[in-house]
Length: 256
Image (cartoon, rainbow, N blue to C red; front, side):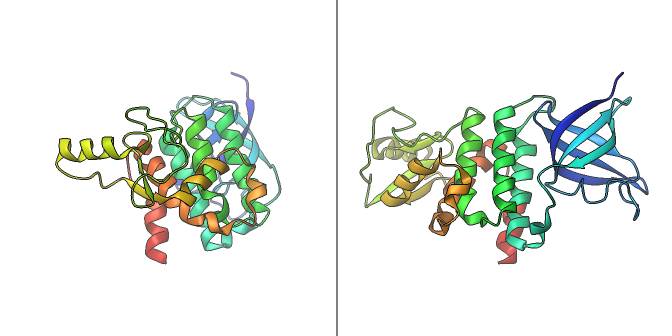
């Protein structure tokens, strides 16, 4: 079979034997896939840093019996020096872990690749993770077809407008898919005899911000550090759809 080339971001790396690595790639053309980089763990590897975590490269692969083999890689968008920043590394790890969990192998999702590539470029340009984290989650979920409902009750469909729902706070339910009105929230508590611990409460101003940032280019959020608290809500939805808690987020919380 002929070799082929993809535009890919490295999501995961793990050792194979004494000198090789198995990489999990996310490419525009083929979605999530695994490949072997022979000799990548050697000091004088021909790949250098081009296949580091969250690096973006034009990668040429040759089909193998069980795994494709990487024959060359050329960096796209420059180096990735900002990963030495603990916060940037933590968010890049979270993004890579989320894509790995949410995507099926071999299924191309070009729109999602564009979201991840745009987020990577924003981080590389010096934008702090806290400014874009919630917006990245919102866009990521939207292109996967599980957008967070922020305008109507996700259970009964009642339009909720822009007013706070109860005590100045609104409830977002990952299990329901978004906003939940007070009536549906009370019904859920009665049905299960307890409140859903995954629910997140947000203020009216936070809800307005979530509604506003879903389509804003990440580079335009550079000066919006105040958006950082919104990620506690959006991360909850990503983890719900991934079916597990994020190890990267747990590690970042422990570090702080």
